[in-house]
Amino acid sequence: MNYFLILLILLSFSLSCGKFENSPYGADAYNTEYNLAAVRYLSTFQTSSSTYKVALISDTHNYYDELEKLVKKINRGGYTFVIHAGDITNFGLNSEYQASIKIFKKLKVPMMTTAGNHDFLSHGEIIYRKIFGSPTYSFEFQGTHFIFANNNGWESSEGGYAQDWLENELKESTASQIIITTHVPPFDSDRYSDEDIHRWKDIIAPYNIPYYISGHNHNHVVKDFGTTQHITVGSASKRSYTELTFSPSGVTHKKINF
Amino acid sequence: MQFAGEIGAYSMGVTKKIKSWYELSFLFGVTPRSVSKTKSIETFSFKQDFFFLTKDLDGLTTRLYTGVNIFHTTGLKHQASKFRDTPSGYYPINSIRGLLALGLQVSLPERPQNSYFFEMGMNDIWIVNSFINKSIKPSDYISMALGFNFNF
Image 1 (cartoon, each protein chain N blue to C red):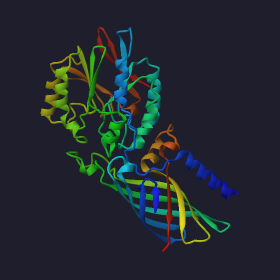
Image 2 (spheres, rainbow over the protein chains, first blue to last red):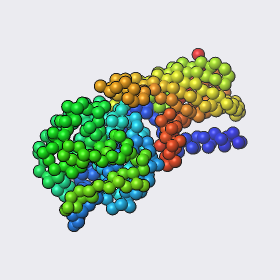
Image 3 (cartoon, chains in turn red, brown):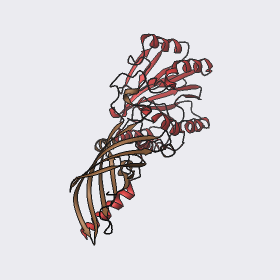
Image 4 (cartoon, rainbow over the protein chains, first blue to last red):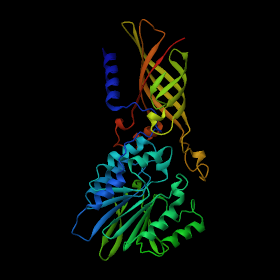
């Protein structure tokens, strides 16, 4: 009788919790295109205030406990939207994407992402594009042009053309100020030669870009990069994120611990 | 033959009973394009099952086991060693995974030489994730498999 009970518990536990997973590397994700949905939402967003705040997060990887806390903190912070600078997963697996999305869905404000290098491992690029849409896009919100570029040149063929794409995008911009987000910092010496780094600086120099945002290095660092200020948004594992405040007097940043 | 269990939608191979409590299997698994929603995924897996409890229920032989499964997936678009311009060792090897399983094997009285099994498991990534995160639930990482062994 006890043995039957053990079998029954084993069977009911697995049937209620488990799924028939064929391969960890499958790309069977729904086409949700969250980036596009978030941009659409913001295009219809009505506010009388000329001041608003944006939460910058990055490198949430498999730090699910920290991500839960981060989402709770952001939901209490009065933000208009969230920018995720990439590395949602560790190995680009669908199961990792789904676990993160389950937590992101608790956000009360829209979130825009660009892809991190880890997100494109295995078949991660296919999954990312299904779930979030293109990692390279832009939108305008209250006079600011927000540009997201995939610069993961090692992992994605598109990433190799990030500089060309950004140059054209900036030329076409009519906004008074621009915020750029790429996962890899433009001064990353692993991935960029001195010549490449100078080209990044030359591309952004003619424009009013108060901040260039990246992730990748996990530590919160703010430093001058050519004519702009570069923020490396710390990883969620460091239990901090960055807040950008947009007001008529300009854009400011603040590191927030949680 | 096995269905699912992370080593392919359909896997086929050979099993050798080494001891009454220990079986070894070598399986080749395929997840076709229509299922993987990307290219066809091929997997070679080396499976070890350790039987720790056997009960006879009116001629129906039931055996509980734990399994250790090491599998290699070929043809991933991005494997650490095949990255364009990526320095060697920049990423850990991603194509070889381990899986721990708990399963039940059943043999019918009419054909005791054949057996059917059901197992649930979790791969190495989620073993680590479940250790470092309290918030994730079994539904995030438990995978199930069904299969059968025909003894020739």
